[in-house]
Length: 195
Ligand SMILES: [Zn+2]
Image 1 (cartoon, protein in one colour):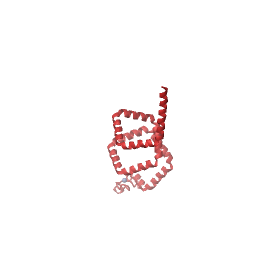
Image 2 (spheres, rainbow, N blue to C red):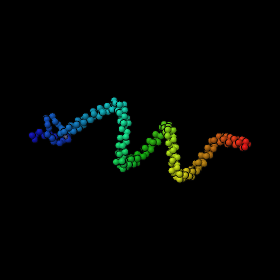
Image 3 (cartoon, rainbow, N blue to C red):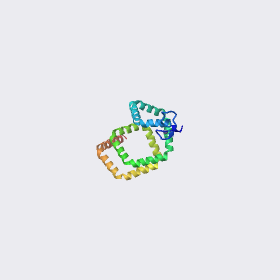
């Protein structure tokens, strides 16, 4: 019986075949060998399948994401929690290694999508106007001292620029401002005459 032993054609382990055709020690090795021998063809088939069914697969994914929103969120939350330190470390390293590229890409994206971004911001602002206002109001109230300090510091740091800005504003709107002052003056004169 000893002579029946063969070597698996995948892992090389010695095994005793159940029939004369058996060339692998178990079904795993048979599948693995089959996969290895047909890797190229299988991956071509998979690729073709994905391409032929692109739209259906996309819909499926979308539906799955939508149907399992809560589950996916929970999973991501748990995954993040379990791997926080590692992910943080990874993100930091990734940022350090790709800083220049990311910055450049971001700048390019902004440069190339100015109109789109502006449109997005406009829409976001108008859809969330009330919420944003309330948020800002609450922030100002909760951080009164900080906001005051910030404005003060801003004025001090930008003294020259603000001066320039006011000057330019005055130059650009001279007529408008004069017109407004004239109007204001006349209206009050009439009011005062009446009294
Ligand atoms: Zn084997």
